[in-house]
Length: 200
Image (tube, rainbow, N blue to C red; front, side, top):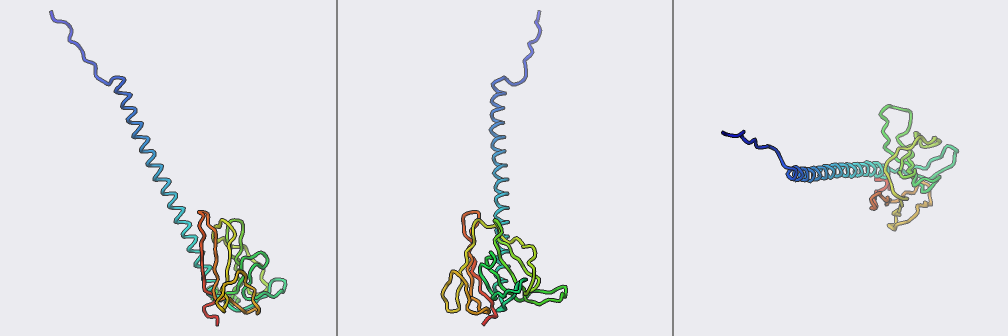
């Protein structure tokens, strides 16, 4: 008489299941770590790219303002006279008159513009007045994030560098301006711009 055939159980033992779960957890942890690293690298790269783009835009506008500086004094909205380039007036970093202001809409205005660069909290801002004389300042345009107070130096026509620009005549301009701007990453952005390419 033959007995019932023995049925063999299929499946995994508890130890095999635990080993498989541990291996899965290790692989999943590595994959999550790699994904997080990739995301962090992408975010970091985007921030660096945005910072470089902001710096390039700022440098383009700053150097254009200084390169087109005009030896033209102005009067403010109260009628007070100001030189063509002035440092520290009314809390401004620098004020200057520039030429080459495009008039695409044909407005009744000059091609000269009074420009004021100021520190507003953690940003360097630019204020472009609609008229050279007697204009009320409009809202400033944010230009660059900063991590401290910018510093200026001025190259006099004689060739020496000055920490302050105090011209004898209202039409005097320096030959170059050095700007040092502290950045969030601990570095300092240094920009040296020639002043008034057509100025003699």
